[in-house]
Amino acid sequence: MYSRPDRGSFFRSIGRWALAGLLGAAGASHLTWGRRGDRIVVPDWAARLTTLDKDAIVVASGAVELMLAAALIALPNERRNTGRLVAAFFIAVFPGNLHQWQTGRSAPLMRTDRARFLRLLLQPLLIVWALWSTSRAHNTSLTGRLVR
Image (cartoon, rainbow, N blue to C red; front, side, top):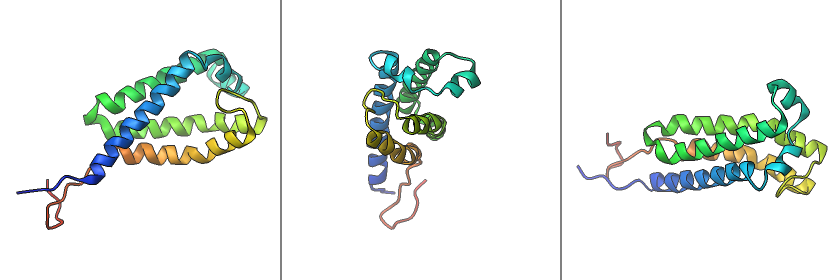
C-alpha cells in the first residue's frame, strides 16, 4: 500500500536537530566560555538544596545538556522518553531563570531585565518544542487512514 511521506515528521526532525543544537551550544557554554558568568545566576538555595557549589551545578547542567542533545540524535528508539526528559530539564531550570530575572543578575546573553524576562516567556515554548519534536509521526495513506 502506498503511503505519502508525513510532512509533520520532516518538520519534527528539523525541530529535534535544532533543539539538539541549542542544547549542545548551551552545554558547551556551561562547560567553557560561559561557565564563570553562569555561576553568578545559580540561586543560593539551589546550592544549599543540592549540597553542591555553584560551579558544580553549572558543570552538571552543562553535562546534562550535552547528554540530552546527543540522546535526541543518537537514540531514535527512545525519542519520546528523551523528549520528556528534555521537557523535565527545562522545567527543572525554570526556578533558576526566574530567580535570575527577579534579582537582575547578569549572565552571558542575559544582561538586561528584558532579555531575562523574554527567556522566561520562551521557557514554556521550549517545553512544547521538546515534546512536539519527539512525538510520534502519524503516517497516513492517500485516503487519510493511518498506516501501521
